[in-house]
Amino acid sequence: MPLTGIRVLDLSRLLPGAYCTMLLADLGAEVIKVEEPGTGDYMRWTPPLVDGQSALFNAINRNKRSVTINLKAAPGRDVLLSLVDTADVLVEGNRPGVMDRLGLGWEVLHARNRRLVMCSITGYGQDGPFAARAGHDLNYMAIAGSLGLNGDRDGPPVPLSVQVADIGGGGLQPAVAILGALVSVQRGGEGR
Image (tube, rainbow, N blue to C red; front, side, top):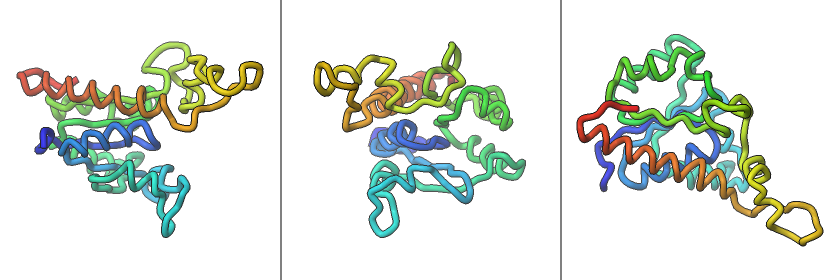
């Protein structure tokens, strides 16, 4: 497999980050999904449930291992930092500034592992007028005007039946960017 030997830490929740790291796992990367103690990833409770487990969560998190770590407590941060020491990639899906507030921002992680590739998947980017807002597929499709392309011409906007923005923009594009960054690191560069 092309990514055998690559270790990915997945700190994301919901579909975009999970889809991104699923693609990396499908290519052979070792993916460790880091979840919040007690609740885990919200997607664990997304219907349909089969024997009490989300079919979507199980499908999108295939080929991954999972661990719970409390990143809000010093011992949990220390555990994550020890994982960062041997990781090639870290994917997170928090709003801008959250990782810094946790003491796990780029400067801290890069100082520990110069080859680490960090991918921050946010709804509206790291800066700009909407950066601090939570984002969801429906919001992105509405802003892009895509909802008005479905349904009756004179009727209300109609959401698509699949999360196109979450998968295409939030999952696929970050995976491609990560692959490019890994090539750069393998050619002697530092993580980014």
